[in-house]
Amino acid sequence: MPEPYKRSRSLRRLQVKTPGGRTVLHYKERKPGKAKCTKCGVLLKGVPRERPIKMHNLSKTKKRPERPYGGNLCSECTRVLIVEKARAQ
Image (tube, rainbow, N blue to C red; front, side, top):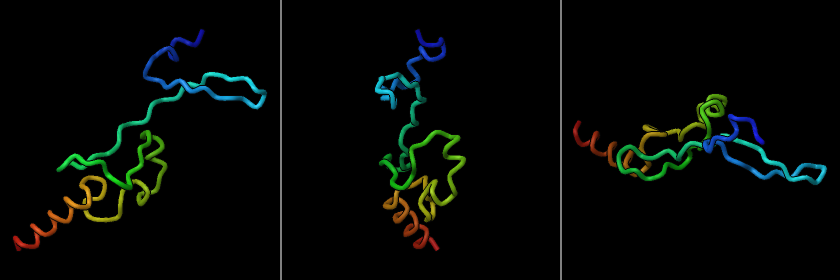
């Protein structure tokens, strides 16, 4: 019987084959959902889908794209916003 905290369905159950040939259960925390554009809701490219502690250890450039609004808006929404701002000036 697994330990009580491992009985939770919030943990993923992975079948892992050990070097000895046995198949054992490993319990891992689930990954968060993919990052979405705040304006149109499309999935963002270049943003990793990792747990907060792993994201904390990544460098800043690996956490989101290197452009204005990177990690918040998709490239198309960013383009539209920049054009609107340029027209307003």
